[in-house]
Length: 146
Image (cartoon, rainbow, N blue to C red; front, side, top):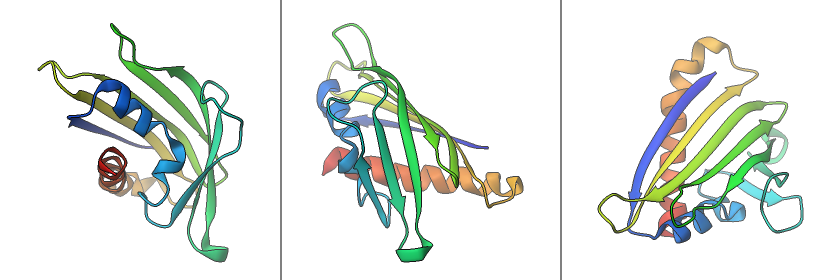
């Protein structure tokens, strides 16, 4: 599996960064050719399922994800969310952590992801990790600034 990590700082408060990062439909379009649909009722929490559909027409695939850990940031604790990918094509997990920046303003966030793209040989994991870091890094920037 390809493992990657993205570290970011934002001027947004922890609460606002968390809100934007966990507004799943907001991620639509931040990853090219991808639309996100939440398939369970609000509010978001453990058990929430959403699907990222990536591609065009017959060349598209679905990446269903389920939230298995959910703890929004509090006064003295970071926010943490863990999703498990349950698709036929993409498997693995992703985690989001949001905490106050030590400077006293803004927030720090970490996005960790381990993914496997089933039709691709494992030998390509060394290429998938930097590609994931690039694509998801751009997506994080779009979600946080948009």
